[in-house]
Length: 392
Image (cartoon, rainbow, N blue to C red):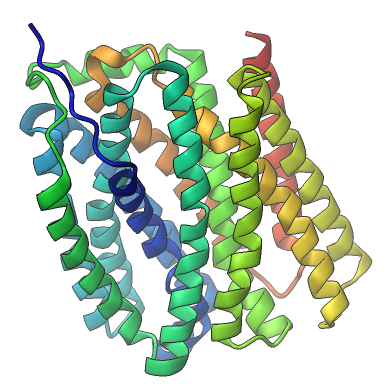
């Protein structure tokens, strides 16, 4: 008789999935300062976000696979240790190249918080309740990208950007201790004999997996491309201080929270695939409004800034609607190999995120229209893909 699976607390779920997201955005208010300090271009410094997702991609594969063989709990604890080592490396970096390497290591470790935690959630909670929990976590986590810039902006302004990485090092120690004390082992049986190639073939031949992989990659790619580009827009064009930019992120994050809450409400009336399509349409509408505003011509005025935030609110509302349902549905047919399937799936969609954020880094220039046009193209593709899902 299989033993009963223990369900970790919602708070622990939120912390474990949230700390990688905080790490992605906490130093974005410092990007202009880091570029000046390391004598690097804005394009190169933005690559520290892209390299983060590349490290994340390889990390989710390794930790997800390891969690099937050594257990969910050990995989999480070892990953947090690696994350702490990467954070220390970021603090010690004295060149853009060293910072890139350290960010890769940091992301490789942090990825355990995403892939293993999602595996735990999928195997310990079933059906509609799982959709609802994903929506609850997404609503709570909408604050983490905002908490990152808010905290990072204040630390940068008060203590300098180096202190941001010390903060991440301290956070890794605190999360390690809490996880060590509070996380039960949820894996019922060791599955080290799983054929990774066989699971990969199943995933590759599954059109729904491809669709969900693109949608998750595109929504996250848009979100973190915004966090890569926004400091240069709001700090350099609108002349915000790093601290004010960080505080400003809260208003942007509220849209993602509303999106996740709306998604949870709509689940009682609509299938999850339909909500994903609605989210993609809303995202496209926000990107179109933002593009129109940028092409019309913006000035560094309060009115233009408010209009830009309104457009971003619509865009991120759609993303908040789509993400939790994509995450919940993506691997429903892979319950027998969740750790390995999650590892391979995560590798794929984080490579998509890395490519999209790299595209934003490559396109970075002095034009305010570049980001909106980029988002509009991605959002239009999301609508096409989600329509096919809704029809299936």
